[in-house]
Image (cartoon, rainbow, N blue to C red; front, top):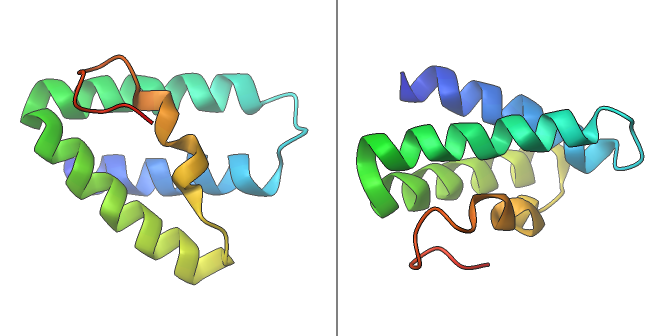
Length: 83
């Protein structure tokens, strides 16, 4: 499951970073938030931290952009995640 979610997140985050003015941004960000809820429900804060670490490394390597600005989409899931 995590592999499929990781691939979906890669696609969503990459789209958001490369198309910040798109009319689809709101829907993409909403899905990113939903996946964060799924990850947190399944594995807690560790799942969020581990997933975002992998996402950041891969996206930074593939497109040269840092997805850290999108970390805030998972704010509110737990007080431990506050960006």
